[in-house]
Length: 407
Ligand code: GH3
Ligand code: MG
Ligand code: MG
Image (cartoon, rainbow, N blue to C red; front, side):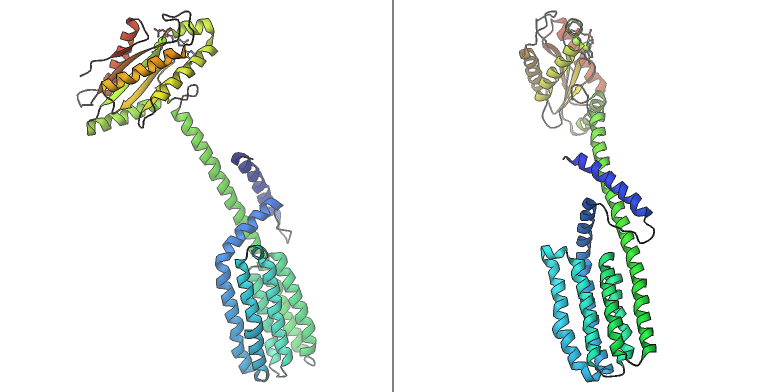
């Protein structure tokens, strides 16, 4: 499939996704069609890679800072807490961070993070289980912070956020029945904080993901539009500069370049050569062989011209119906004549039969001029002189080259 087709295909995919995601107003699935979803996840991971390390390290530090809180609030088990946090859970968290350097684990980022959220919450519950200190009651609702971290700071994919949140809430609810035995009032408060914190962060998580997906879609649309514009620009540039039949430059582009070169020649004192070229007896060819055959001849003659005017700065243009002009900066009259002779011979050697012409085959008449621009001559005079020289070739029997004596 070529690029153009891909962009059109992706464009309609993006348009559909935009209208669909815009209409999702209330906890509908945010997933894109599979091809787009894959692209979205790839982009998201690329973006995440940068923030992942910073967020991960912050999480590890915050989690371990609680050793100090354990030391103050739960002195009976602070050593066990130290061991569990630093010795078991932290290495696992670091492994989670490192897993992002491994290609196939990279795609499982959300799953790995969800497991880490559950593991960290579990480790805290376990630490609190070990303690017989009354402060455990105050400590307990703090587990909600872990869920907030996953849902709002890490911004897990909504489905993983939901998955880890539900598991942690259940773990909290069940374990609190044991840990807070005899403190039903505090237990209700703790569960309420846990559940409301979780629900709030899940709502936030959902809308963050929705915004992120809309941003992605708009960005994709921008990329596609830019690609389309580039294609249009290339096409426009061709149309503006080129003659559609012969693919040579058109008259407008010749005039524009001629003007530029003339001014440069005036400034830097280098010669500007011009060659005027007209197909001989072309009306008779058209009248007798048909317009299509005439077009074919125009293309063949153009090929010969463009093959000979292939140096940097040289411009071969279709000036009118069967008239061509070559702009030859830095070319003297002698060099121009040699080139004109090559073109004349090249066309003659094509040997395109033309029974109604002077020479029996398609030929061209050429006029060549070259001058170092001066302020007292107009560039139009150079063109005129080349045109007159060309007519002189016609008068002298066609299929020839005439130099002009412009001083
Ligand atoms: P001369 O040898 O004096 O140049 O005579 P000529 O017949 O070549 O010149 P004239 O100006 O009388 O005729 C030019 C012809 O070129 C007229 C027209 O039919 C033909 N022509 C102009 N543009 C096109 C084109 O795009 N395609 C074709 N097939 N013919 C064209
Ligand atoms: Mg002609
Ligand atoms: Mg003509």
